[in-house]
Structures are given as structure tokens and as C-alpha cells.
Length: 376
Image (cartoon, rainbow, N blue to C red; front, top):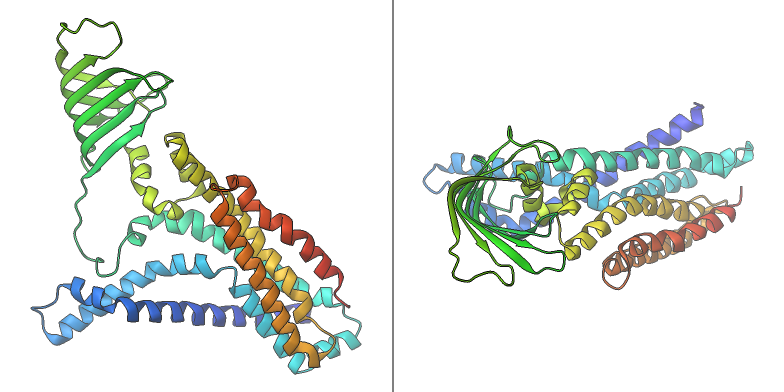
């Protein structure tokens, strides 16, 4: 690695960390100002001393934003390289360092190469954040302001979860600790959606060591009542009651855990979303496809915005730096707004794939044209 490469990378990394610290700090500061009353009400230190109350409140705020930083970084990951590149190039232009490089015969493409490589590396950090860190701390990220140490009920209802055999599963409560369903109702249906039978049970407990073939594990149901709802069935036949039965289904506690996390689907990894799509109704499946496509296309768009801005930042004429910064902000702003609109239309007015990748089709050629206009 040449000396100039190390110098540019060092300056870019410094400006990247500076921009990251400023943006994250501003976000956290504004969020604390808006939601400080929620932290104060939820702390529960009313009977403690002043010092203990302050220390406990401060601990909750630090704990909350320590994990929230993962989400903030994901939100601003596309803006930080632009700011870092701008700060780096403006400093080099102001101190006539670019002029010296050009006089020595160094191409401006050669100057931009270390910045682009560093931006690719930070894009990989975004992938690490999304695919590893955020799914691992998803329970921490689901906390709200003032609910850091609050105790929540783990029992959650299940509403009409569709199975692979077209049946629907309902339950009044599900306890993930004991892996128990309460007041279970299963509606068996045909492919056209016509009910054929119903299964009612007081409770169902997941047993992982039963079953064979495609289903390893099943639900041990207690106090079961079976109804036959097929047309032509004799109405005088009473429902069948049995004390216990095993219900085999691909819906296991792992799948239920993913389903309950649909509210925080942005925090899940791509592999978890792919599993969640298998047992989701069509409307939700479209939304999940949108998230998977936009997650990948966003990384490409982050790089395209940097490539579009480079010709404005690397200029032979230092006197035009202010006007170049203005046009750079305008063009990247248009790219950001267009991307936001396309992402909102994905799954609504546009297909999830087209809505996610349309900004790439628009600004990809523009980035190539802008780089071609760079005077080296």
C-alpha cells in the first residue's frame, strides 16, 4: 500500500468516526429530550434516595441506547460515507494536497479508490449489524422508552396462523418458556378455504422427541374434541372426545418465535425472514419479500450515492468547491428521496422486486456517467 493510500484511508476513517459520533450523538440527545419523561416514569425509583434514583435512571438510559445504537447505525449507514468523503476531500482541496497529487501525475481515480474500498468495508459492517448483531439482541431492541427493566407477560395469543395444509391455528395464550398452548382451536380446510373439520383442546405441549418423517416433534394435546364439518355429515353424530392426541405440524416453537417477532421483522436476519415467509399469509409474505429485497438493494444504493458524489468532491478547481458541494447535496438528496418513494411503493403500487431495485436501475447508469466526467 502506497503512502498516499494510507494517508487518505487514515483521514477517511477519522472523518467517518467523527461523522458517526456526531450523528448518533445528535439522534440520542434529541430522543432523550423528547422521551425523558417516559424514562422517569418507568424507572420506578420513587422511594430511593436522590443519588440511587439518578444512578438507576442513568443506567436505564445507557442500557436502552447501547443496543439502540445498532438500529441508529443501520439508519444512517448510507449518509456517513458521504460526509466522511466530503470532509476528507474538502480538507485535501483546502490544503492544496489534490493540486500536488495532480502535479505529480496521480489520477483522481487513484485518489478515490481508497475511499471506495473503505466504503465497501463499512457496507460489510452494515451486513454484520443486520444479519448477526440485531437478530441476537432483538429482545433488547423491542424495549420501549421507560421499559428497560419492566417485567412483561410472556403469554401471547395466536390468531389464525396458516399451516402448510391450509388449516388455521388459534390459541388464547402461548407461553414460550413452557412451550404450551392454551385453549387451542385448529380449523382444517381444503385448498379452496372450505372448513372440513375442527379440533379443540384445552392445552397443547410441544414434545420434540416424537414423530418421524417430515415432522420431528409434535403437540401433545389434552381434553380434545373433534368435529366433522364436511358437507353431508349426519348432524346427529356427536363430536368425538378423546383425552389425548398428538398433532403433527411444521409449526414448532421456533416458528412461533419468529411469527411473534413480525412486529420487529426489520431486526431479523435474512435467514429468519425466509423461514417466516413459509408460514405467513400472502399479504404478509409480500411485505417480507419487500424487506428482503430492499435490504440488499439499500447496500447497492449506498455505494451508488458515494460514486455519484465523488466527481463533485474531487475537483481541479478549488474555487468551485462550494458550488460543487451544493450540487452534490442536491443530487444525492434526489437519490435519497427517490429511493424512499420507491421503497414505499414496493409491495403496493409496484412489485417488491421492482420497487426495491428501481432506484438502482435509475441511478446506476447515472453513477457511471458521473465517474466518466471526472477530469483526471
